[in-house]
Length: 147
Image 1 (cartoon, rainbow, N blue to C red):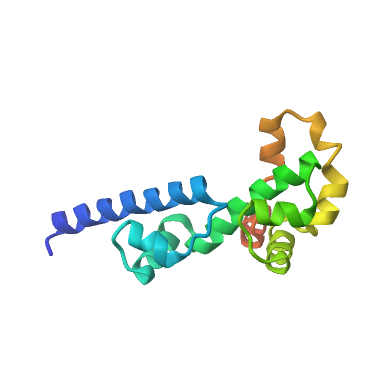
Image 2: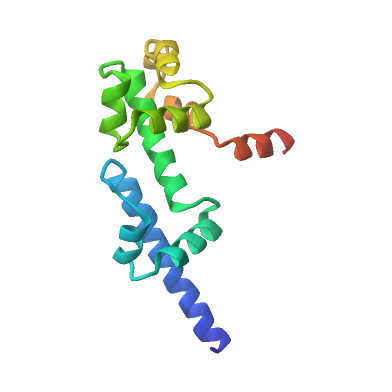
């Protein structure tokens, strides 16, 4: 393959990866798996996973879970739904997995997060609240402290 052909293929892959990321952002609450995402852009699941990780620094599944946790954080701040209802509203099928991933990304259990922030976050504008409460992966947090 010539370097021009390789560059064109790489651009096509990046466009497909953006479509996958956009689909995850739109359909985070739907049942999504890597195989279905890969089929949607005519890639193999393995190739999609490798390329997605190279482009975005995390697997498609990790990106999906981060989106779900971000939305869950917003719902928990509103305080209208129980933790279980939030879990299912964001597309998680298991309360245990949801709670584990939430705790990994946010640093506290969903119920603790809700009790701490349900009233306080309402005082902040939503754009500020979203930025300061964004879930941060452990490796991102450690890089940020060193920087």
